[in-house]
Image (cartoon, rainbow, N blue to C red; front, side, top):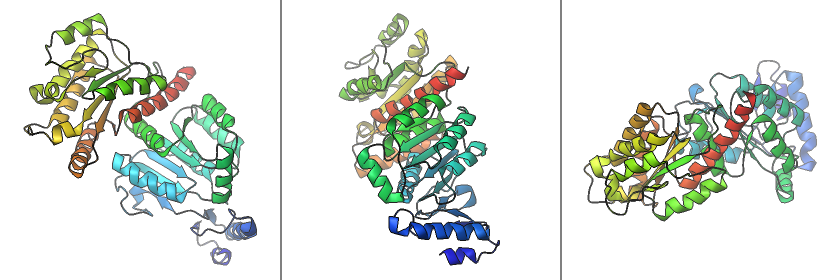
Length: 398
């Protein structure tokens, strides 16, 4: 491998080294150093080794089948090739659209800092996601984030936070992981959004792709509306734990809702909990009138609509596209109120093939309207918590 790169002789600018067996193993670190020397002598920059490749929809470049072909604003750096595959495949299904994704592996030459610096200057990238097991030059990483100064949200999923995780990172890519407190301090100083799981990572990227952060008023108060039953009660706890509030409605909103004479079983406090029969009123367009009522006594920071898809998919009543009507009428109500509220949709499924197919169609149609769609209420809570952290940092800069 080093001999092949050395033979480039200035005719190749970049080499992508997929092979493993380099710096992640103590007995092979000499081989990685030999690779790097050969590349420098030949004027070649190296991505890897021990990576899988790069993904750029606009350039029609990918290393994994099933990746979305249409480009978007999300740029990702992944130290793990396998996790890069997960991010592309799962992210594409959820509606995340990428400007680029680069797997950097051992980062013998080009690493996370180099790609981060590129994304910071790249006009096609508005949101940055990073999976890292170790950052070689922590000072440079901090300086890039500080210079970025919140211009673009950066979401970090950090591996190797615990002692066991550090050992795993060292054997995986040879990375030197650092203390969790360092990253928490960095998040406070730079607006960096820290997440623990792939689910949280994708949810945060999805939210930042669709929603416009507000520097003047960080997200706190949330209104929930849907057919959830106990799910609404549990979700109130999820939001509270995420640092968000589900406040009681003002008197004017309560009067409006009481005057709508909902069918029995409808709860009109926040969260608004409506059975399927209520949501079928006006073929689902009743949702717009409910949103009008919410805005009668104020403007919430976020509005989370949640729909239990099987209630409609498996029902005898298939005469209307209830999801489309609920979302469209709600967005029209937001426009009437001139609201800057973050609007999110949760489509809950039972996992059956029929429901999943309907959910996929609804997700695509709704996201075409500019609304992010999440799988469960806790996912939406985590996404809004990420948004709140970033918005609070932006507020400090005002």
